[in-house]
Image 1: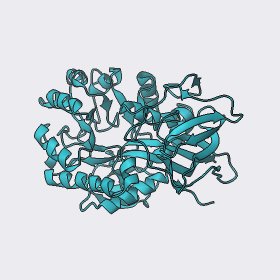
Image 2: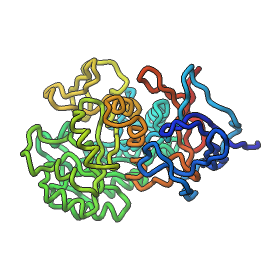
Image 3: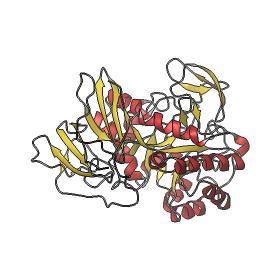
Image 4: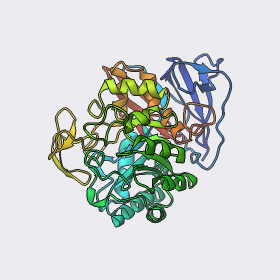
Length: 430
């Protein structure tokens, strides 16, 4: 069968220019032209904020490239009556589940992981990091093994899962910082145990959230970084000095900043100010309107200056009806009609987010704290840079063709098409 180049055109999400993208049969972006076919867009600015940088910054092709395309041919994707926009695929570094599929409940089947991945494509997510949280040793082993099996069974799922995010069990045992994590399983960092889980995952654990308050933390961080695991600070009661030592050891991110913390802290110093002040740390945050107030997000965006990134922290109740539920992460929880998810026994403590990433992008942009393009970048190009894969992802020549086409109507984002490695994996019905 003869393969043909895949071509898409629409409005660039940041510049508003009408562009045309050509994708090779290997699933990489080969050309990006403006409407007249004369001015070529080679690369957006590092922050992706409504500006272009002339000159190419081609990504190197490699083993992450897409499979050969079927004959999709050259055509435009049309939505409803609105304009169709083109943006990089969303990257969610922290996702616990959604649509009734819980990545932290056993038995977890590979079929469930594949089904969740396909639902995420409908929301514009092309890459995500299934997040496995604090649990028993055997349970974590089984969960990461099921995710690995899904990646091996279905190629596009394997391409969409960037790695596994292990959030715990090396967290603070204190009430507040521990959040909804089960205190029975909280423990000090243990390298041998982590290696056991890494073996079970097929070496897919790529992010580890831990608390630096443990004496074993600096050495654990160093060994993780040396083995290619990104270490993120979270669920911590660490002193400012312990936070600084963690960064010196190689920790490079903060997990859902402002959450998994004491309800009351000394005004200063404290572990929140210290993380904001450290330029080495990327700052993940949840913009669902409940986890951190907009005033905190405003400060965060100014302090981090291009190193802020959106995560969903979505749990399996995302997309479900309001009501009372029982979850692994928090036991009895309540999902309110307004979309707030909290512990039944302590309503002041949240139990995860029930908002998917594209909705968080729209909510953040609507808050007026940043432009729509900036919000989208915090959920796409910023995570790519944080994990050191900026040359693989994005609307740039040579990058893997992971992108989304969408409409914006009445303050809502409607995904029209999601393309993963040059393969259209989701197309909305007319």
